[in-house]
Amino acid sequence: MQFLLDGLQSRGSEEGESAVSRRAVVLLSGGIDSATCLAIARSQGFEPICLSIDYGQRHQIELERAREIARAAGAELRVVSVDLRAIGGSSLTGEIPVPKSRSAREIASGIPVTYVPARNTVFLALALGLAEVVGAQDIFIGVNAIDYSGYPDCRPEFIRAFESLARLATRAGAEGARCSIHAPLSAMTKAQIIREGAKLGVDYSLTHSCYDPAPDGAACGQCDSCILRRRGFAEAGMVDPTRYAEPI
Image 1 (cartoon, rainbow, N blue to C red):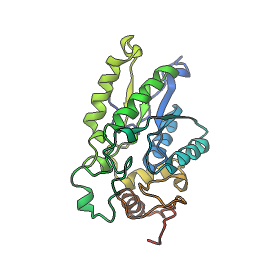
Image 2 (image 1 turned 180 degrees about the vertical axis):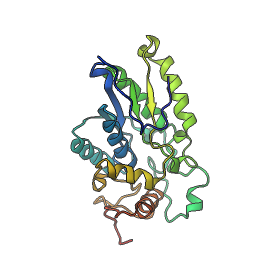
Image 3 (image 1 turned 90 degrees about the vertical axis):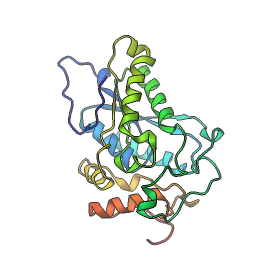
């Protein structure tokens, strides 16, 4: 097993390698990071099979965007439902208010209530199951440096640990198959991610970031995710194509 932190480096195909072995499962949420991850996987020569999770999130619109992103990329998309509202503990799956208008210092300190307990563990487990079924040995997930301080399941240590688990917990692993978890955005800022995606042709107007959108899908502009998105585009020197509920 090998943890691939800098997935921007292309992996060369071995002579005679089958198309099946070049498949990769890409976790696709419909946001900036996962859309960029999908583009990176394709740029490295993988045949992506996208996986979106309906976990009962209040921002269901991201699933619609995931479908649009996959369609634009010409990639297969599978959607799995796992209702994490039954567990609760997060403002994304319950009635806890989504924090608004927080400063950069507040966003960077502590674990926010938008953290969904075990979400990435569940997501990667489902991706691992799909990878076994379709014969993929590679999984892409769009965790990045912006999330380190807030979400413990976005840290490189977690990705490495899950990769070790994959070796032990699957038939493919037991039979000697090498499964790699790619986290190509881990060491990148949001601005760097946006620049990389733009270079690869990602249409960010299809993506959605807001945790608490209006009924018509307009982004609130004030939740942590909106703030990080707006800052990322500003630092990248690009126009944010998001439609906000109120002018920012």
